[in-house]
Image (cartoon, rainbow, N blue to C red; front, side, top):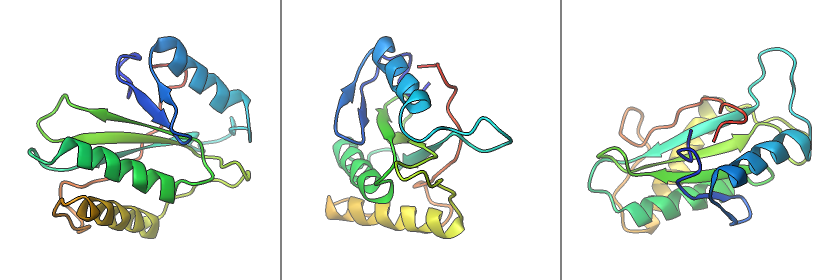
Length: 152
């Protein structure tokens, strides 16, 4: 979904660009089969889809770079991919993070984590000349949703 069937380029935690349906499927396969195993028991999320968004007119490159810097800092030790979307008037990007880190520990975000992520995102935007704060309810929002495995 976030890559729009492989049409939009994704970037992973190592800075590699992922383009095309086969490359996206390869990422899904690696997340499932390499590194710490994903739990197939219970209701545990296998991954989190975090959406970073700003109002229409926000510089798209600044948002992209701020999201990437936020992901590099906040999700270090996890596999993640990011992609920017341009299908809405407001500029936004998705970061999909594998729930189990390289150390085998699960990402289990709480309100304090979401607040810290918003703070980091706002900080990174300000570093790039974009006026932003991390207040609840503004357009800079975060959402959790697992990806559909095997889907692009």
